Image 1 (spheres, rainbow, N blue to C red):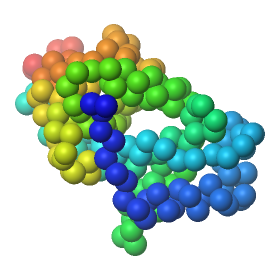
Image 2: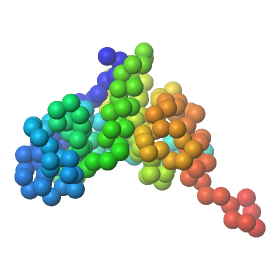
Image 3: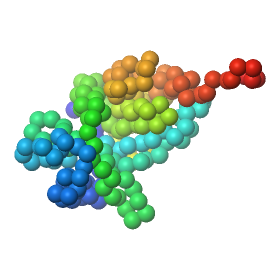
Length: 194
């Protein structure tokens, strides 16, 4: 399989397993599909979640690891996801959630498994555009918690993608970042110097 999923830190996985085993955490989660799951639920496919804080004309100027996301599987499908975050005391469970990004992530991962080149799977969030992408990093042996998108890496926007950006279509970082740059750069006001 050419798609490599980096191992999550053991403490991050433990926090998710603890939350799944807590009736309070599951009952209070805003995830009806998790509360109503029939049968055992398991965290799978841990993906490091990187955040692209700033996009400049030169490209990605600041990315940081925000946490790890685990798809929560019940039977043959993911019903929710669990997010962890790094705190001063180590990894902590953040929250459960569901929604369109769960199925979009599964679809993008299946699509990536058919590619001939090996990639490391990560998630890249672009908060300025309310956009989440599957980041296919070309170095499949790299530490999943570090690094920046390389020009030859692929970004696969997950549905729902921002208007004008096709979901589930792989784009090289060098091709997509200039498009994103024009989206986040405010247009000059009428009558102001450009």
